[in-house]
Length: 109
Image 1 (cartoon, rainbow, N blue to C red):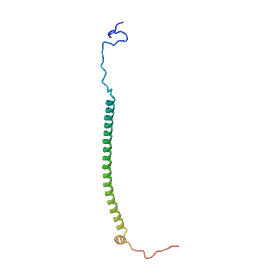
Image 2: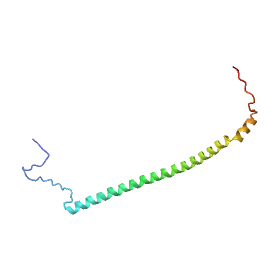
Image 3: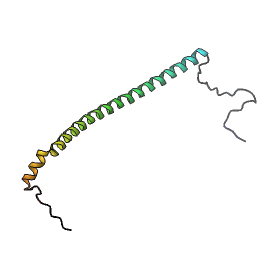
Image 4: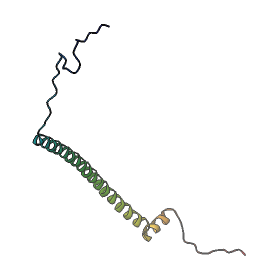
C-alpha cells in the first residue's frame, strides 16, 4: 500500500508544521476588540438614522410646499364660488341669457 504522506509514528508530530493564526489571548485585547466593534456598530447606526432624518425632513418640506400651494388654490376657488353665487352676478347672467322673471304661472287641474 503506497502513500504519498511521509510516515510518522503514532501519537507524534508530523514533519509538516502548520502555524496557527495569532489570536488575542489576553482579556484586555478581547475587551478592546468588543469595544471597537460596538463603537463601529453605533457609528453606522447613527449614520443610518441621520440619513433617515434627512429624508424625512426633505419629504416634510416638499409636503409643506405642496400644502401651501393647494391652500392658495382652495382660497382662489372659494372666492370664485362666492362671486358666482352673488345675486348681482346671477342677475347679470340672466340678462345676458335673455331670461325674464316669471310673471304668471298657469296651473292646470
